[in-house]
Image (cartoon, rainbow, N blue to C red; front, side, top):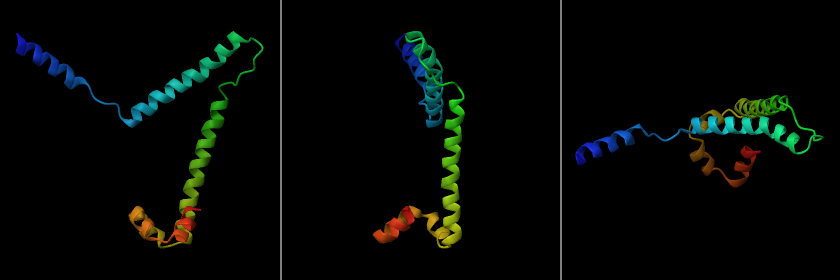
Length: 110
């Protein structure tokens, strides 16, 4: 009987798996969306004259994220065009970046 109980416990442990970063990010985004939507209703329940942001504000957030990613991509693209050795350095950037002097690191950073 004890071996059967131990076998059942091992079977239950095999089902468990840790959440990946993508799954955690999805759960957090869903929770934040629910909080954003229900936050306005809760605020109006407390104070009926309160002005709340509507769902259209989420499109502004999405636009800001896309604009930021586009700016980073354009900076990397221009850096590769204007500074040809960057293609070589990008292959193992952390090693090559640490070999540069401090002022060279600042130039790459800015």
